[in-house]
Image (cartoon, rainbow, N blue to C red):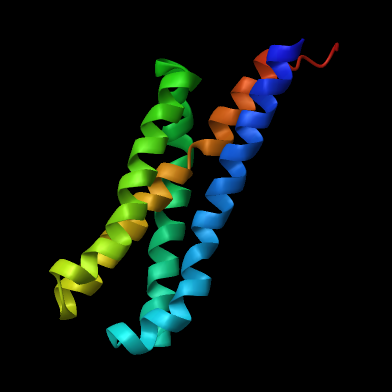
Length: 134
């Protein structure tokens, strides 16, 4: 019984962190625009690329999660999301101009693709650990 609620807290925490990763660009965008010479339209495209990755990879990510198991899928998701999160502040150090913006688009797509499978995989875990009869 106790393990079940630890799993619930883990999945809740994972979704919580994913939410803040998704909304981080909203807060950081105001500082990024003048410093990196980005427009509001370009920031909007960054949001769109994140949403594109999120939407496209929900179904395939859920299927992969069923094949490899939730535990391994969450490890994969964590590593990809970590790489995308670290890549965002490192990109301006190495790139400028159009290359920087292309890197931001790729990082946002990668972050979205990592976060897309979170809730489909979590639903499978909840189905297994929290059956409706209990």
